[in-house]
Amino acid sequence: MKQAIVARADIGMGQGKLAAQVAHASLSAYEDTDTQTRKRWKGEGQKKVVLKANGESTLFELAEKADRAGLPNAIIRDAGHTQLDPGTVTALAVGPAEDDLVDRVTGDLSLY
Image (cartoon, rainbow, N blue to C red):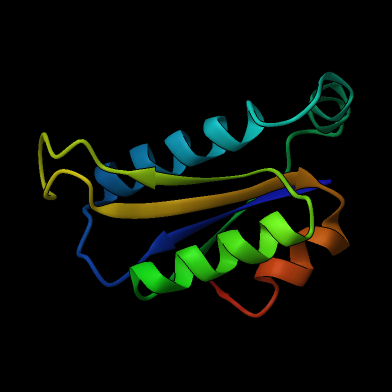
């Protein structure tokens, strides 16, 4: 099992901002799973991969694909307290779920 977090590379997030947005996405998608999936993923080491995408539309397209596949996912919008305007879409998490199911949604993306 794994979780893929897709972060936007086109909006100039600093390293700290990127880390925070990835963490928000990971936790939000995790909360969208059932107890059995949570326990299994945690027991297997909570594998994650961070990928990059350019543009808000890509994140929404991937989220739609994840929804159609029945995979937990979460789109993250920044609160606008520091580097970005309020409501800026920054990241998407897909999973945790079986590796191959997550790869069907995010497998064509590059590592961040």
